[in-house]
Length: 514
Image (cartoon, rainbow, N blue to C red; front, side, top):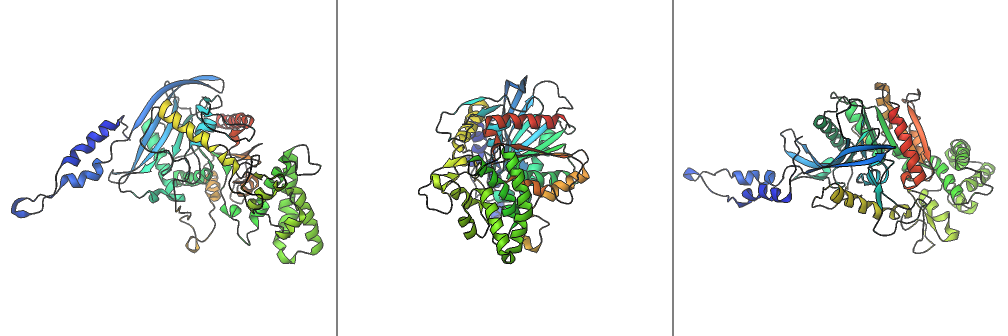
């Protein structure tokens, strides 16, 4: 993986001669002459990968660390060595002689179609953008970008990866980017990048951690399957699952699918508790969600499974309890057949105040065009932070890291027509995606692997009870190698200052305990 520092002028110089050549000439006896310029034109249009290396110092975890920052492209190639795609990464490596015991951690976000800016500029990178900790909107630029004392650079080198179609990463030449847009296709490309990075930096025998947020946890499961499920085995020490979604049947708001209502109920209880919609509420959210968990998996699940056979007296009892846990009126819940979808909950919980609540983080509130709809117009917990993060990654990459490609950074939404099927999917792929078994298999076959799980109580994109359900199935060892951590925020728990510190310390402890 040869890395070159190039500038725009050199790229033009490479392309220029080929563009100047003429074609269409004939050889002796009028035989067609091979137009070498035309044949090479596509290749000549792809310059060498651009890479910027800068040096910095910072205080992380109470230690002053000097580090190299390497931002730029790694080319993914076909068997003939032709570049197919440029995967952009940001590597932060401690200066000095290589310590064989120092870990390296590979991180990404989710979507699919999201760049790594959220974890990079919000949680673990050496710089972070400051947004309101109390679930208020981020407003407009300039946004404070500060030294991140909670970065993990004191305990691990860190590589943030933008999958193809996200961030600055892109397909090259005539390559169809859809070749990388799918659960397995995407995971293969990330696994290929990791192997190339280990080659380039001589870190094959270093402790290795991988991790992601949201769909990034799905990606993590698929990536470990590619790394450890092949003959070129890359053994991983730990997986970081931040706001997990592994079994997509839990997120399917489909008629007849009762499981999602059960696993979402404790999150609704947490949101109702936070917004003071619970009469005589317990002192802590932990106490209330523990109660809601037990009720959801017991009486509530039983009632839903009985369907139309549910006796009237039992229905009345369930209705009363469901209203208490959700803060929604019994009349509304009865009309919804005891099945409250998250979208309706966001709109209904604070309708009496003229407010909606967030999907990513139910602490956030918003105001819709009108108060009469069934679902909110938008997610206040996303539009409340996205401007700050987009500004931060562009400012840090282009100005701080001196890496400024002539393309737009795609924060989210850069992929489409995602292939959700697994190679093992039956019935022509007509089944819910579930990658949790990949992690179960990895744990069974790698005794040194551990799993760290972090969930926000107010996250509806990836509810905490759904994560618990997914990782508590047959096939998972029960030897204590999965550990759980909870936060008083939502999907991006690091937007709350206290939770950022807790998140950083929790993961730092996990890495040190390898």
